[in-house]
Amino acid sequence: MSFPRLKLQAEQPLRISRPKGVVVVLSKIFKYGSAAISGRSKSLRVLKALPVISLSLVLSLPAMAERFVSCHDGDTCRLEDGLRVRFSGIDTPEIGQPFSESARDAMIQLVVDQESTLVCEGWSYNRRVCSVFVNGQDVQRQLVEQGLAYDYTQYSGGKYQQAEQAAKQNQVGVWALPDGGVRPWDYRHQQRKHPVYRNDQGANQ
Image (cartoon, rainbow, N blue to C red):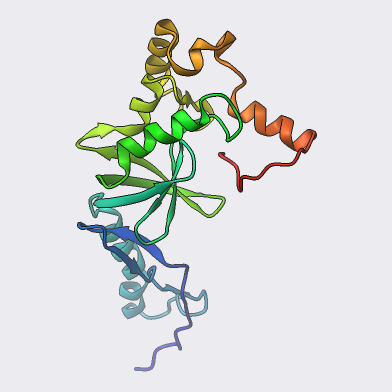
C-alpha cells in the first residue's frame, strides 16, 4: 500500500518553562498539509490525530519556575534568558509619570532574583504576556494593592477591581493623586497624538 506524500510545515517554536530557570524551546507540533490529510486511507486518520494529541500533552504541562533579572518598568521585566515578560491584567504608570519609578522599584522587590511561576497566555510587542506568582502570591494583585498599578480591565476582566478599590480607599500610591492620576493608557494615547521627546523605549500596553 502506498501513502500520499506528506508535506510538513513547522509552526513557530512554543516556549515552555521548567524548574531552575531553564527554558525549553520545543518545536511546535508539525501540522500536515491539506493534501496529506485529505485522507483516503484509514491509516492516515492516526496521523491526522497526532498533532491534536501532542498539543494536548503540551498544554497539560504545569506552569514552572523562572527567575527575573531586571525590570524596565512596573509591568515589564526580563528573565534570565533575555525573554521580556509583560505582566497580565495590570497597567503601571509610564516612565515620566508620577509613581513610575516607585512601581518599577516595587516590582523589582517582588520578582527579581525570586523563583517566579509564570502562567502565559500570548504575546504583546515582542513580550510574553504572563500572570506571575511568587511563593503562591499573585504579584499583579500585590502591586495593585500598593496603589502602583491599575486594574487593566480591558484585559483582566475586572480581576483586580477589589484590590484597586482598597488602594483607592486607603489613598496609597497613585490614589494619593487627584482622581488617581492620568491613567497610563490615556497617557500613551496623548503621547501618540502629541509626540514629545522621550528617552525611554517601548510602551507599557
